[in-house]
Image 1 (cartoon, protein in one colour):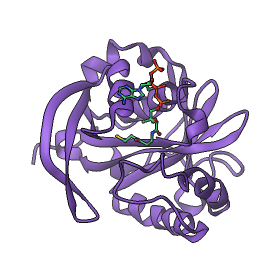
Image 2: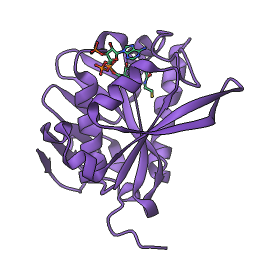
Image 3: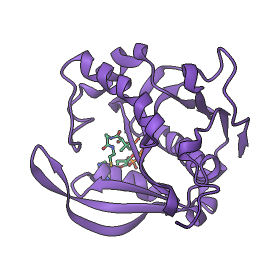
Image 4: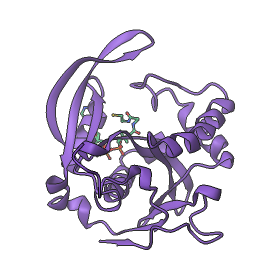
Length: 224
Ligand SMILES: CC(C)(COP(=O)(O)OP(=O)(O)OC[C@H]1O[C@@H](n2cnc3c(N)ncnc32)[C@H](O)[C@@H]1OP(=O)(O)O)[C@@H](O)C(=O)NCCC(=O)NCCS
């Protein structure tokens, strides 16, 4: 079950994040925190594996500076309210991947979740827990009503993973994405707040520590 510690800037040495304040979502074996420059070697090692990025419009990483550039792009995206992305940190082994939210429409109380983990974490239960943490943040911390996941029609592994967590297949969006100029069909999966509330993963313990950025919070949004 959740605990929201506060919505104020985290104390020094807490959730981190510098002047903007930090934000962490802490679970039993994993935590989510904002990526830092020193995470670049780990992210590079994980996403230089072509299997990890096989269904993405980007990658595999060829140079560590691609991971550095990705990390450096995130504070501006947070400031603009366009993406809230985290490194997934195993309490035992360190950084295992990325999860986060983007494509926000606060008027409609929705966003899109995206996740990639290094191959060693596949099939270990890490996806269940990292999704529990990011969805806990989405529904409870940010007050969203719907979380979408776009999944390539060829990405059978991710389809199985989403369905077993309670995401509902809403059908195929034809030519939804371009990968190197090539149109790709995606399946739209979604979890509504009510789906989440009755799901097993909503029972996973999590704690939100630090400042929940107001530019991502749906609560208090008007009807305009
Ligand atoms: C997607 C991802 C986060 C899921 O995490 P995971 O740890 O692999 O997920 P799960 O533990 O639920 O395992 C997925 C299941 O799919 C099954 N699977 C594998 N290939 C499959 C296929 N072609 N069709 C259907 N199911 C398949 C696996 O056997 C596994 O089931 P099992 O545990 O009963 O063996 C992870 O695989 C990943 O990071 N992939 C690369 C990036 C990516 O594609 N992200 C998602 C973009 S939509």
